[in-house]
Length: 422
Image (cartoon, rainbow, N blue to C red):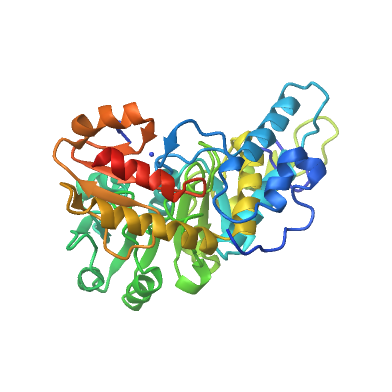
């Protein structure tokens, strides 16, 4: 429990086969003294690619599955572990690290820091929004699409069994057509829920247009941004998105168990608290223990009013936070747009060279997301052996495969993969 009368500041995806221009550093974050020799890679990473920032064995083109952690993030995590071992070599900085990382993420998606809450996963974030809106057990209309995350589709299908009016838009020409979404979002629709960038094929919604349509019909919009945050530019204020969430182990280059939930400031009053815990308490007082002041009740609690005070409940994962702080600094200094521009020729070459070689394209032509997917009957069985022999890691499914290059990949990696699949 927080000390009485004081402000409370507690410290605390899926079954598979498995940049050029610099922005100024945030003052006071990750100095050379903080990060040792790896800080040189962060402060001046230079032109892409940034292979030297990672220790990757083989040819890894599977960042959409889980992004490798950088050397700098690993070092930051080791410093936290020194503190947890109580070995006297490192001080407790987790509270400051958590505040800084939250601020950095807000900057990355152009949000205000007090619109961001820590969550353990993207799926938890989506459930919090659904619960907060009181959708469960109602006949409200929810519109989504077949490219949304499969766990989310399971969520809404379960609610449909309880009466939810669920509308799932199916893809055409490897895309979700905006006019079909618009036709489904009828007046009275409660929520539109999508993945900004689909984990299936990298299709990317025009979030601003989707939000404009939804809002004109009185609907709110939730976006799963786990495949978008850190890989494509996101501006939540410009798009008008109401809610979005992501974990941090993909393009944010962090680790599992840590994520973010964004709630547009004027939408927070629409969400009922569905969980309660000590991290929501701004102030408390007791009137029952020795030397307590008198009071009318044994306990007094004053809840906080920010997004994190609305959703954070109890103990949070800490070890991933220092690693995430490093990677968020790296993304901001390198620039997501620069990463996207570097990656695009790799994506274009994959689409051009693999199409027509027995692989059915699943990704829209001209896509600028980090994912390229192809369908092939029995892809997992047919390709796994040759890819393993070549030391190449991409994502294999039963009848399709997904390729997702990142900042450490080069055109040589892409040509090696193409040759292996030819």
